[in-house]
Image (cartoon, rainbow, N blue to C red; front, side, top):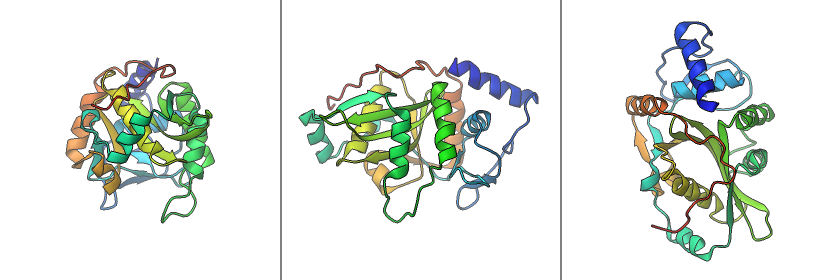
Length: 244
């Protein structure tokens, strides 16, 4: 169903049956900005991600970005730190997928971040991405403590064979890293081509992510969009957390 929805929308955009909200072609400015305006409807969000951009916030007028360079993580290149390796060996936490998508988004919105005031994850953005979750386009990776309390996780969208990461959170040390590691371990057998990390950060570079120039990223995007999205429902997935 997910693949059909995305392909139908892309076909309608290509044939003119559906009006483009975002420019047909765009090139990021020095900050990565490509467009301001539009809405957070499901069709607009699908159009944006399949064109290579994403909303910076849900507040109007909505800014859409496609950073250059663009950071991507190939699952097989994930580098686990010593502290993460220790956490994996302890088997203290339990990983679930799509068990509490809204809870992950709300935690990502509520966790204070160094150097930031407020959050870019607005209430209308939560509702929009939860609608995408109902369509099995948006997914979450969740980390639960021994008391079955959500203490870390991440969420993003899947198009083609790529996971477009949006945000992550930790309420216990290294639990967001554990969620990312679980996504990579799940991604290998389920053939994820790459995880889109959006912006270049030292944190993600240390975990093995690779910066790509804009044209390189667009080529990679076109390639992955030519593939089916595969499994659509992630509930019940298991991740092999044994370190390679």
